[in-house]
Amino acid sequence: MKKSFILSLLIATACLSVNAQTAEDALRYSRVFYSGTARFNGLSGASGAVGLDISTFATNPAGIGLYKNSEATITLAPAFSNTSSSYNGNNSSDFTGNMGLGNAGVVLNLNPLGKNSSGSVKSINVGIAFNRQNDFNNRIVIHGVNNTNSMMQGYVNTLNGSSEYIAPASLQDNYPFDIGLAYNTNLLGYDPVSKLYYCDAPVGGVIQDKTITTSGSMNELDLSVGGSLEDKLFLGMTLGISSINYVESSIYSETRADTSIHNFYSFNYRYDLHTRGTGVNLKLGLIYIPANWIRLGASIHTPTWYPNMRDEWYSSMRSTFSDSTNWSGAQDSPIGTYDYQMLTPFRAMGSLAFVFGRIGLISADYEYVDYSRARFNSTDDNFTDVNNQIKSSYQSWGTVRIGTEWKISNFRLRGGCAYYSDPYKSEQNKSDRIQVSGGIGYRGKHYFADLAYVWTKMNQDYYLYDLANPAPVTYKTSSLLATIGFRF
Image (cartoon, rainbow, N blue to C red; front, side):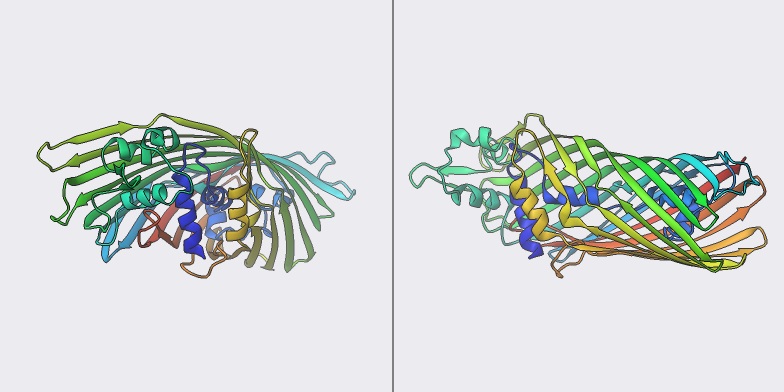
């Protein structure tokens, strides 16, 4: 089922002249891997019932209600990614690194009723924070020999399998970003007698290489307000302003490996995509402390509405032939642009923390999200097919985060782990993600400093095109976060 889903995505992207949005895009922007402060990451994000951290503006905004003082923090978050792939018995790997800002923000303790107030409202706090939600910086390298088919044969199957006759003269208009480029660079041939298309390597015999480089991030500006009732019930609300900046550049090539192939020698296909958008959501949360040793937390996040998403994409094809003419071809596509809207799923979180006096704590979060609820929309196009694909292929599940923190004088020791469930309905080739973290911290009267290390791993199959065998890809990321903060 999952393979059929992925193949349908690849077929859909062959029609980029219509639009560039697929169900895979909706999943990319619906999966959230919260960054934030080093303390938050040292606990693997299990802070929903703990609070007192600016990162919780993005998870459970009730955490702002526990502040008794004003505070400002900033977090640097360099990350290093290693990807490894296996394709038709050939292994490849690559390594990248980048410097990012994980978090920055300030909390103001207004305390309008005075510290000695006898009323129910003990404090009111407001805050603003920048929190990173996803890091897209990565690179995948895939290499192998295919003795079964070529990407061009996939194009041939698309044309010959169409229910309507597609004339060569109409290819550039109908498929300006892929098949049209291949035909204009002589990678596809046409038989006027049978009215069928063909290619030089229908049964493979080619070396295939692909490098996919991605960059950018998803970030959120959180505007939060919260307070305390009798220092037992803490309430909070966050207005989240989300931004997406995703850049993808992929280079795919085939080179003749079988000398029995006539004419064709190699081709190179490049595809570049840039997606941008700004959205808004609302988060409501509470933390209840029925006794000093236990805390309960809950929060809900409305879907994030992106009213102004924009895709820009471009592709090019280069071909070389080894016949007597040594002919080579080059063709560039137009620049494609498309504006649309997107809605990501609703989220809900439940949290529990056990507090051992002033010595330490153990906390856990469960986050529910139904990825099948993501949707695309536009004023001039019909996303029914893509939205149905999202609904039928993704599932509702969630994330479990567990963390602990222990005090040794002015120092803190932290550890945690998290499991992000597989978003696909099919059990084949799971795409779940695991995370392990640890950290240390120092708490002074007016300032604090924290360090955290986070290791994550995720496996996922990548398909070069619809006829190709899957290439299992393993993603491993190491992040080192450093936070400094001041109380005033």
